[in-house]
Length: 192
Image 1: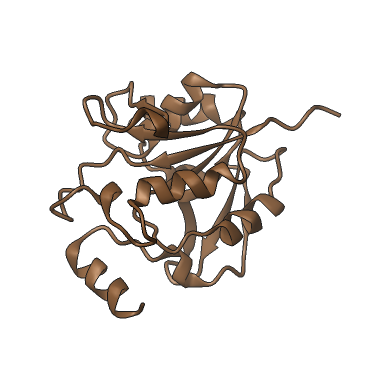
Image 2 (image 1 turned 180 degrees about the vertical axis):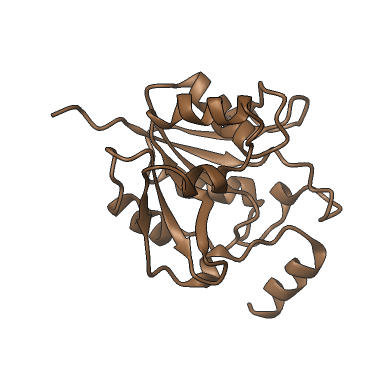
């Protein structure tokens, strides 16, 4: 049997944060900036952890910045950049604007990992769709993701919906609350 690829962590922090009006990676939900929180959480479960970022974006070296190398306006840029860096690794990618992600959530996803599939992800029942930005991407997904991007399809969700993946059901939908603008942030804070 083939060896299961080691799992690296990827904090997806390469967005412009234009709807938020300030850098989402620096928002404090858990006593530290979100990019540090996710980096630390992933660090408890993954072999290596990197922070996906735009070229020119200042990220401390301690967070292993991984500047985007492609000209794609999508989180797919960070995922494909990670695969270019370590094509032999699987990548557990987590978006910076998911403040309810915890060690327990990631352990649940990892416990259902099927390395024979292209990816393992949760099903978000509120959105009635798979959640692409809290997903384990296997090395076999790399060429197909790149081909999709080359053909103009830069949606990670669309990719997942059209390929052989492992979908994990039953996760509390609060995990998928995406805080990507000031209104969403205010709603999230009111539920604390």
